[in-house]
Length: 169
Image 1 (tube, rainbow, N blue to C red):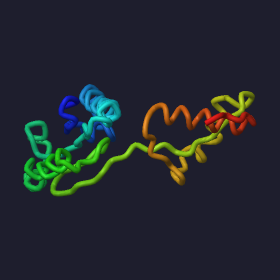
Image 2 (image 1 turned 135 degrees about the horizontal axis):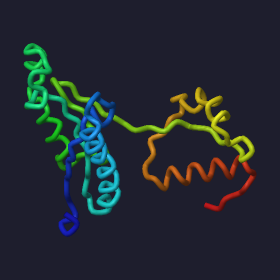
Image 3 (image 1 turned 120 degrees about the vertical axis):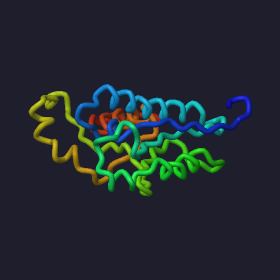
């Protein structure tokens, strides 16, 4: 893919990984790893037009046999997932997208980070964090983070500003 300066990769994650599902710790953990792999591969492939996405399908399958009512299963045809996969591999495909699909419904799942808080060293206690949970969980101003370094940079800049330290760049 690097040699041809082009590529499309679709990894399969799961609602069990993204949202949790009773009794599926091993499955959920493995499928959550696909989101991490997507993020890293997308960053590494960006300069070569290699786009990497994750699909979170939900469909009637052997795994759901006996769990879903027949009427429900009839709405969950695996073929309803195909258009989502094809969109993720097209020439103009996005990158780093988690596309959820099932029963003819399609949605994008995003991992956001709230604005958060800064605590001076003297206030860094479990009790102080707990007291500010409402502020930390406020989704107003939540951010999509582009990379782990972007998150680190964001924290360092917030801490520097609160401490009166002028950073370069």
